[in-house]
Figure 1: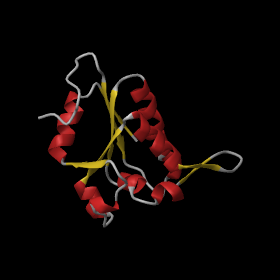
Figure 2 (figure 1 turned 90 degrees about the vertical axis):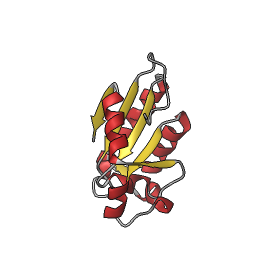
Figure 3 (figure 1 turned 120 degrees about the horizontal axis):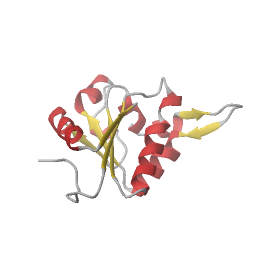
Figure 4 (figure 1 turned 135 degrees about the horizontal axis):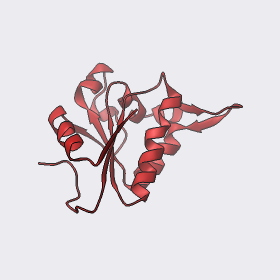
Amino acid sequence: MSVWKTNDPDTKKILYVQTHGEKDPERTATPFFLATAGAAMDNEVCIYFTMNGPQCVAKGNGDTIIIPRKGGGGKELKFFIEQAQEIGVRFLVCQPSLDLHGYTMDDMIEGVEMIGGAAFNDMACDADAVIGF
């Protein structure tokens, strides 16, 4: 049983894999930005958070992870998270990665879904593109 929601063969499916978190803020926004663009192109898009990735979608971290800009300043990761959620990008987390950081699903922002390794591999096999960060 596929985790993908669409059955339309004309709808492309893109799976982003986010492995970075708080220690690499410059690497956290890109999957959200690209996923938002992909969804705006009428694709079905998911971001799978594994390894340190769940830190990106833990409650409160969107406010504290700042995406640096040359010359100073930057945007909170929350800005990119909200854009992606508003356009329908799905957020999926890996259970062992939650355990790695001492998180439970209650620690995740609203809308995050948990899937197991078999479901992830099923999605990856069915995706038109799998892109890792």
